Image (tube, rainbow, N blue to C red; front, side, top):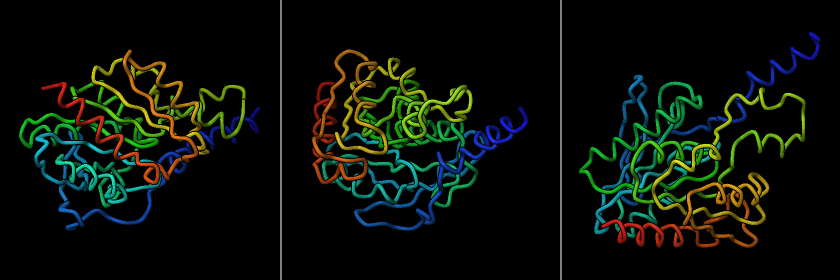
Length: 257
């Protein structure tokens, strides 16, 4: 029994390195497209180094959550597409990433997401939308459920990380109890009151297309789903994902006003 417990215990405590791989790089300083570094202090005292662009003609802002092994600066292409459409943008950061203090956990990054939303809300009280990619959707969904965004766009979202772990390693007895950071989008998405768009590529080998498709069935009625034929996990930009997202935000904002 000991020979079983030790490896399983090691897997449990090693998950942080797989779920939260922190790449090198910081978000400090000025960036292209008018983005400036800002520091957001969380309720538990962490300092998050994010990137912010004030709103333009759209008079609304979009909160952007990055995916695995990225930092906020890796989302500048998405951010610039949104800012060119007149939206303010906050490229959010998580504790431990991009020069921010602390170490990431599921509870911690959700606290970071809420603090980032509240930072945007304090900039002028304008409507806020949420855009997230990959594991960033695991923060976006609970934040959207806890706050009042005018619209939410989820790109390549998992139903939960237990499903992705099973996809990777197959069925293992008791595996459910070994997943330390489950990120249960499937259990929370029904609580989101804003319009939702889910975008997923059919050739996604990281988070299978079926995951986004299933999450859409669990979302509130009226949730939109876009299937992108041939797209993978990290190449959605080549298929015009930001045109889809921007159009959705513009329509939702118009309906909200």
